[in-house]
Image (cartoon, rainbow, N blue to C red; front, top):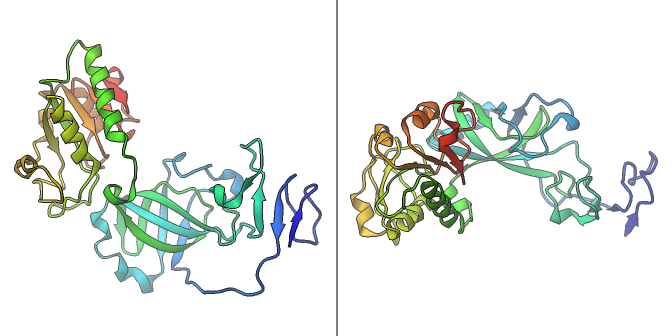
Length: 302
């Protein structure tokens, strides 16, 4: 049974707080499953209005406090650069099927929105892992209220979890345009790719979009090298061109010799201000140079 809202409603029924045009339904009489809250998320935001609209709007370092009984489950997570965080928006209502978001001109179904209001108010965010101390994780990229219950943590790999097949082509085109502005051609140019969107380890280099970048740059006649402190040597991977097996990470200082440096991922251990000082041209695909003040004219985003 559905009940469309004529107005915000009054307290005392399940329609209270609805906006014009929103529809609420009767919830099932019982739950189908149970779950465990495995910790709490600590953020600077005490109310819903204080929270960022999405996880990319804030650079605040938030703390994930894992229940001590699950602490051993963090072993190995320090090797990744990003963590997928699943959390329970416990303040959200759960009975809406049609919503009227303020930023849309018309109503939209709950499953066509990222709103926390849904039958099971589960939220997900890909966060940048800063460090782990005991049972606490310090991350960037959350948008929830302080004290939000934690459901799960999973390693995030851009190479398998991110689907953006056109991005490598876009990056190459942006690089060509930027070089042309300097009166240079991509053919014969020295391109330094920095770095692999991978695990933070010297022994595992998973397949990544950077491989496609190397292929596209080489197809256009560029001389390609890469730098990554966590992947000193290429490992054999499916469908990998044989020449890549001979590639090894070059020192970051070679940025001075490159015609262009392409930032394919952002590692915390890299001094981006110094990188921009040394480089002739930078293509930033990760907004890694957002805090750089010197040499901004060298930086092009992609």
